[in-house]
Amino acid sequence: MAASIAPASAGAQPNTPANASEALKQYNDLSEQASKLNEELLQAEEKQGKNQEELDKANADVAAANQVGDQAKADEETFRGKVDLLTEASFEGARFNQLSALLVSDSQQEFLNRMSALGVLAADNNEALDKLSGAVDTAADALKKATEAQARAKTANDEAIKITEDIKKRAADLDTQKKDVKAALNKLTGAEKSNLADSGDMSDIAVPSGAAGAAVAFALAQRGDMYSYGATGPDVWDCSGLVMMSYRAAGVNLPRTSQGQGSAGRPVTRGEVTAGDIIAYNGFGHVALAISNTEVVHASTDGVPVKIVPLESPGSISAMRRIAG
Image (cartoon, one colour):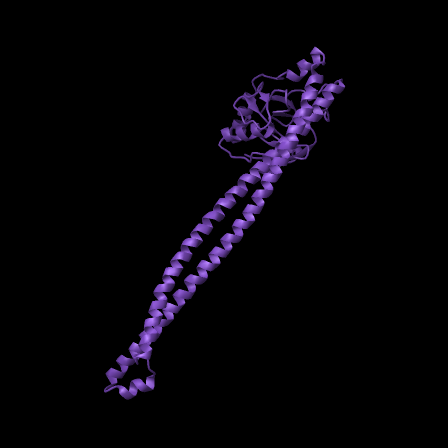
């Protein structure tokens, strides 16, 4: 069981003292917005990647359909030639009805032979026509479906690119705002600056066995590392990057985004939360990893190191998910 630390007051801004200056409050507000924007950007890029995979598959389907179409054209020539031969044979008298077969036959056996030949000709002709029709229909249907899939994927991919570009622009705008906030932070007192940079509890903490414990151990080992938007280690992290890589170290693959991670596994109640559970906050804009029923370890915001905080401190809880155990 993980060790406990006395919790701070719930509802406060992440890692913000009760007497935070206005500049520090503004900094935390903008950092939270930036974290959400970072997650939205990751989601858009993830969507773009999936759409590109769909587009690649559609292109492969089109290529395969074209191959089928080419083969169908070759089959069409073969089967049409066969049909033509059978038609020509019928004009030459090879195809006749049962009555004519009986009239021209010298014996019962010859009649049976002629009837058998008639059956073979009919069967061959039907088989050739069926194969020709089937090959052409199959090729046309495959090409139609692949073309439609490609069009859908292309449209979705274009939309994802547009979303990504829009989010990148907003991220750039927010970076400009953050520069102004950082300038204001230079006017903070030494105590306020020290509070931001404090890595918190760095003591050894017991973890449970299994994948959940391995994930928690990995996350705890990153305490003191700094936050960076879009980072997945090894020495800088964003919130979902830390959670994803912690579980990857335990042999469990998780989505890249806080939205995806906040929907992974199965839900648990507040009273059931234990080490290894994922806690999503602020409308799934942030995630942390529980180390006990009262604390989480997380990559918080720009300028703040990975640290342990009370479970309610990162913000309003949106989901609590059990990944392992």
